[in-house]
Structures are given as structure tokens and as C-alpha cells.
Amino acid sequence: MPDRQGRGQAAEQQAADLLTAAGLVEVARNYRVRGGEIDLIMRDGEYLVFVEVRFRSRRDFGGAAASVTAGKQGRLTVAAQHYLLKLHALPPCRFDIVALQAGSAPQWIRDAFQPG
Image 1 (cartoon, rainbow, N blue to C red):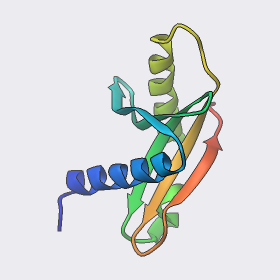
Image 2: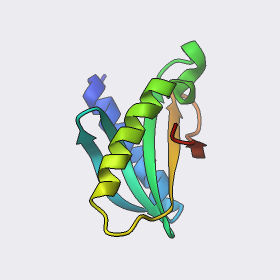
Image 3: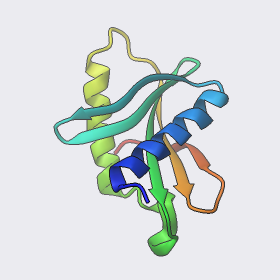
Image 4: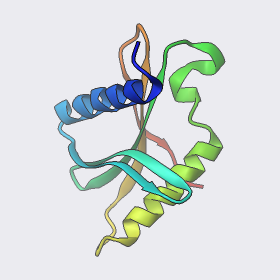
């Protein structure tokens, strides 16, 4: 059984493959700043998409998608704001979740939440 980091990298690759097959283009992976991290940053047409990838081997506590709490959303927003500061023009943006649950098909939730 792979370690937690190995499972996380495999889940991120599976999510990137899913999104790329749907026509999105990868811009960055594992963008980290103090206070937050974004698993994948993708381009979907004119949109810049900040993607949180969640993997759960069990369905306890609501499963993978439910594990993106308000606190996690806040940390994603901090990292996204930092990333956007580097750009010359602000594109339209959204936050997506790719939830991977053992034994189930991946769930891609577009526009999963609005930054608070």
C-alpha cells in the first residue's frame, strides 16, 4: 500500500488526467504559499480554475467532497489570491473539487464554492 504522499500524488494525477481529457489545460500543480495550497491550477477557456483534489478510501464523515470544509476553502482562497497577484490581468476564476472515492467514479464538482 503506498504511503499517504504517494496516494495523494496518484489522486492528483488521476484528477489532472480527468480534467485534461475534458479539455482543461494544466497551468500549475501544488502551488503553495504561507496559509494555503492549491493542488491544481487549470485553464478552462477564459477561466482560471483552482482545483482541490480529495481522496477518501472510506465514506465516513460524508466522503471526499464533504471534507472540503469552510476552513479549507479559506486556505484555498488565500493561495488563489496570492497566485492572482502575479498576473497582469485578472481572468474570471472558479473553484472546483475533484472528489475521488475508493470504488467509485471520480466526481468533478465545477464551481464548488464561492470565496468568502
